[in-house]
Image (tube, rainbow, N blue to C red; front, top):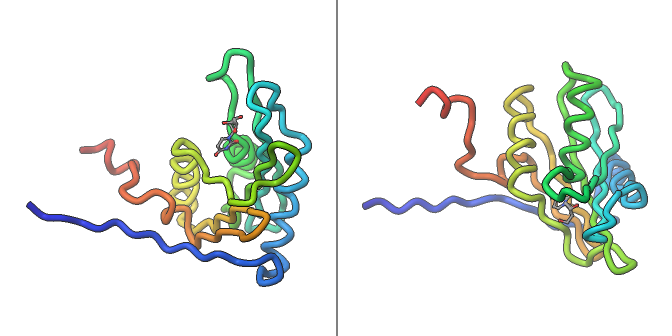
Length: 160
Ligand code: THU
């Protein structure tokens, strides 16, 4: 038997410690909670992407009376980017969560499905995507989406 330890690096920043570029994409994510369509959960998630060409893409969660038909904020943004700028790598992804009349104190953690989609983007473009998770007290920063999902299912796994 062998035991493996899977580790991930994450940094926590106060707002003032972030770069202008990081604050810009986080501000988009914060603005986007207002556009969230979440009549069932009342949990607003906003997303912002910064593409390598400087374009900003906006996303937010979209719910549905048939619950599984909805989609998370991160994926609405990543799929919009893939549809509008298929050749352009995603440089940064930011999310912010708002519920009960305020942004969450602790950053929201992307669901497993969104982590898998973020990884696909990194692999597709061969470029790291920085992930920024906004919290009222601290913002968590991951240098790469890969840090959020060790032992990822990738296209090589399809070959067996
Ligand atoms: N949600 C996101 O938009 N992103 C996540 O990573 C986690 C969850 C949304 C889905 C649903 O509309 C609401 O939050 C409650 O789960």
